[in-house]
Length: 122
Image (cartoon, rainbow, N blue to C red; front, side, top):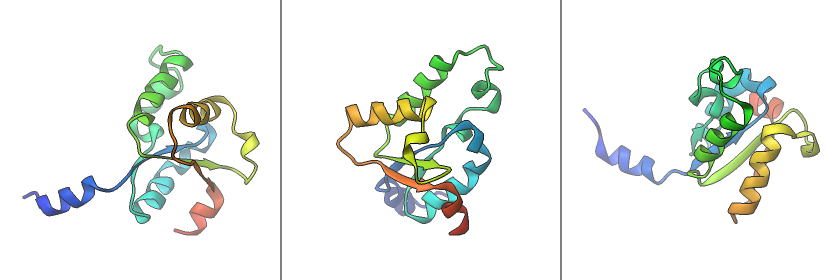
């Protein structure tokens, strides 16, 4: 049976879009846990779309996949970016485009995390 009080409480939690590079997708579940433990609802594209969509196996172009990602992100309350180091300049490609979109469309600051620090805090 559904506990509607819990559902109502969860509705107030922020949706957090978790951006990170494809080569870090094996950390997606750890990133999810990190967000959940901090009171957010994680939206992790690598867990939303099957791997064969992300790696081109379904005939989708990179631009089509990025468009789906940005559609998801536009419904979120926050953008958290997870990278391999504190050097956010190394975030190019799709993550860089997601950051650019967020900066253009949202007044909410972006939060940055180093993936290895997230894993250590589990």
